[in-house]
Length: 172
Image 1 (cartoon, one colour):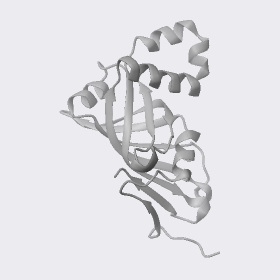
Image 2 (image 1 turned 90 degrees about the horizontal axis):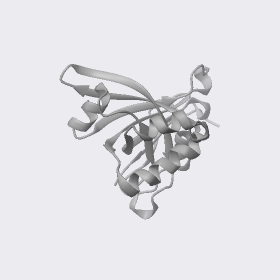
Image 3 (image 1 turned 90 degrees about the vertical axis):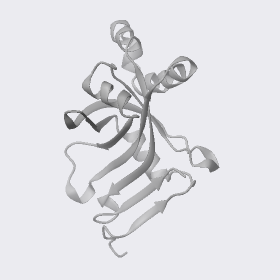
């Protein structure tokens, strides 16, 4: 089998379902680095996330990521004030270059409330059952904002399928 180069990209765009390999990779990780900009310039932070990787059906709605952070943090203020646009990466630490896999993405973040928050919270607790098991931790996180990040573009890099192999998806 010929090795793929970085120039070869598999695309899923314009209303197509998010590729299974990208959904699996989102579900395999738990930490993403969010990048954003505010009045002081660009900044990044790491947050734990839980992914709802349903394909969204024919409309290409794609996966949804949930994370917890206070609106008073620098990134919380920036995301609430900038229309919520952010870029992010997710990958496992300590990988060998020949098997490196990771995700890059862009999307819109927003704080959830009511039924949307309750539904997102269930996804978060399913991914992090230790939160539900600790009354103190659960209580602290329940008092903090739950955010949704809806990616509109995702790229999976998977060197295990050939150096520089990329698979992309964008919301239609």
